[in-house]
Amino acid sequence: MPLSQEEACERVDTFSRELRSHGFRLTHQRLEVVREVASTDSHPDVDCVFRGVRHRVPTVSLDTVYRTLGTLADLGLVHRVSGPTAAARYDANTTRHHHFICTRCGLIGDIQSNELEGLRLPASATELGDVESVEVRFTGVCRTCAELDRT
Amino acid sequence: MPLSQEEACERVDTFSRELRSHGFRLTHQRLEVVREVASTDSHPDVDCVFRGVRHRVPTVSLDTVYRTLGTLADLGLVHRVSGPTAAARYDANTTRHHHFICTRCGLIGDIQSNELEGLRLPASATELGDVESVEVRFTGVCRTCAELDRT
DNA sequence: CTATGTGCAAAGCGTTTGCAGTTAG
DNA sequence: CTAACTGCAAACGCTTTGCACATAG
Image 1: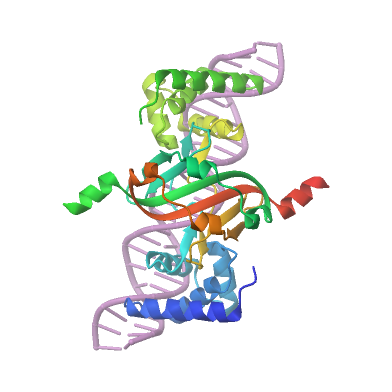
Image 2: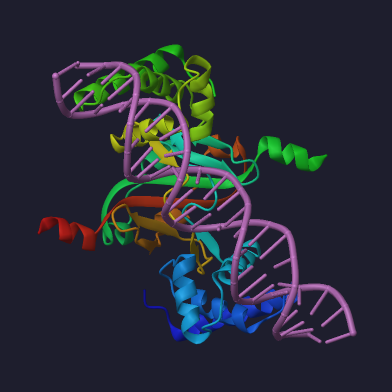
């Protein structure tokens, strides 16, 4: 995952600025976590970031990495890909379909769409490997939760 | 999640047949787990299926539900939505993009595509709630893993 | 009859939390 | 100086596993 030096620096700057502007202190540990996660596009997990940071800050704890990545995610500066903290959910409908996922209550609804059925595989996907399935995930706030907000 | 009686029965039949044809015994417990998961499109989690089954088989254990759902998923009869078996992974690239996920090694690669950028939200999605983001997940086997298979 | 499946209990893993000491601003 | 942050260790929730008993075929 080659990531240009400039791009990485720019991210570090943005992350630092955003953290400060939200009242978070820019500690030594945080800065190194930020550097680590900003320097790659390989979607590292927490332990991977931890090991990277430890090279430069041997006393850093795993908890701090968890907390910092959590903070960055809350601010929308990084995204979580793949399972966060949820129990597995099963779908007995194995025909091709897609999902709407409510970020508030966890509701998962099925989506059918002719436009999506007709999707062609982008070259950037087939270059990476053999694509066996495609799922589109729409995330947002469901009707019911939006209703609750309004009151 | 209204699911027609016929559809549910058809699923139970298929699941039972597939289990047998793969050499699995069709036990009382398994049959009820199959019935439970086949009777809804609400994407239940393991505990939810467990509670449903327990109404009819009070002695069933949570482990059995885990094992049966695992077996069904291995056979491709049900799908797991929302990742379980994985540590959270973080992505510092918050520009709109999509992912290729290797089911063998867990590699996550970024996908850019003009066609995907132009996607319109299907009505079936906007009906469920306010869509805040869209992510397309291509899953399959990456180049490297496919190479390993060939040897 | 025998290989499979079950229930139980204990362990595993990623993650979160309470607390006392540390530190940025 | 003080509120915020850190590291530690313990707890947590979901899931898996080892084992003796039960059971489908």
